[in-house]
Image (cartoon, rainbow, N blue to C red):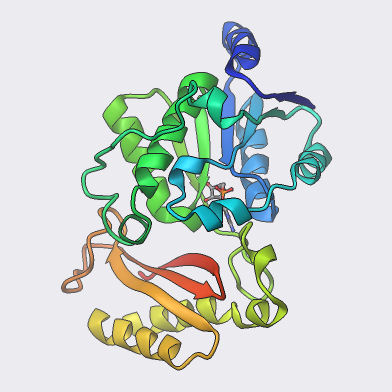
Length: 282
Ligand code: AMP
């Protein structure tokens, strides 16, 4: 397994792959890998000639310094996990200074409104940070295909828009959410949950599932009210937002339309750990 930490080191490797006309599959991650990440890597291994997994905790997408400081960074463990899947994966783990050319700052992006609700509203500047890092990863690694999880569904749409707007020649593939056996969406942050919060956290997916069933027979407003009530009564989990939105535009639902598909999105605090999840409703 080869690990590269600078643009200068990896540039000739990328050139070599391109000269041989090999397809590059990129899986961008912030490390603290779990089976959700691994499922993306496995898909990339099946579909492309050379997989690159990037491991980089991107400072510019964090709006909360404490969240950034506490973000887990078990680098050696991550490498072992990838090695178990394939020795042939390239790991790209740059420093912030290297990938940002010395100035660790994001640019401002406009993603046709996809950046405004939910994660954009509650994490100011988040998608500018995401756009900034993903653009740099694409420029440096020149992938043919890049894999992103539906766990971060809004991010997936934002990145599709980024590629369209900047005309970056890469195919963006969305991959399904992997869950623990009790339904909790896998996340690098789950390891930070206290025992009692970890036991409570499956309530999030359970509520999403019930919301999905209700959505078939009740109005969106009724569903949103019901979910809000469930969390208001919960002793440990604090709801930040629950939103039903158009799955293509992320516009909040107004009136159900038979021709549209919808998703429910949720962000919840368990102690100081912020968890997000989402579900297709129809
Ligand atoms: P992160 O390291 O959290 O930035 O995630 C890296 C990539 O893995 C992103 O595209 C995420 O959407 C994806 N991912 C994270 N958790 C999951 C999961 N439970 N299932 C599927 N993909 C995931």
